[in-house]
Length: 122
Image: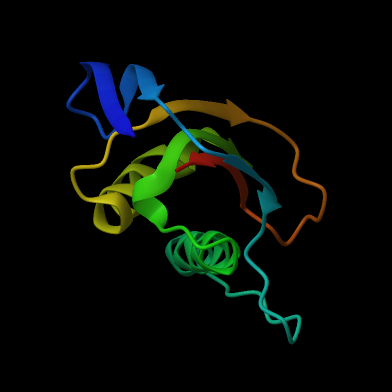
């Protein structure tokens, strides 16, 4: 299988992302900044890292890694979180630049400052 970023933006995402020959896709439901004990961090940065950790766990359980992500949808509770979201996403994904959409939206629980869903392929 091959992955091909199409028109990478240099801002941690590509305008499109081609996948040739996938055997399967995994659709990860929106992950939130809450651990299995119900703990929710106070800061956006901590919430963002925990959300990515939850995504990584779901992918690992499916036999995949973050490098298998081909599409990300990020829901932010406010525009003020854009820069921190960008910084954390870059730390987590490095030079991996799948297709991405960011939406500013009311989040289901007022304590959650973001929610992230992904599509992965292998």
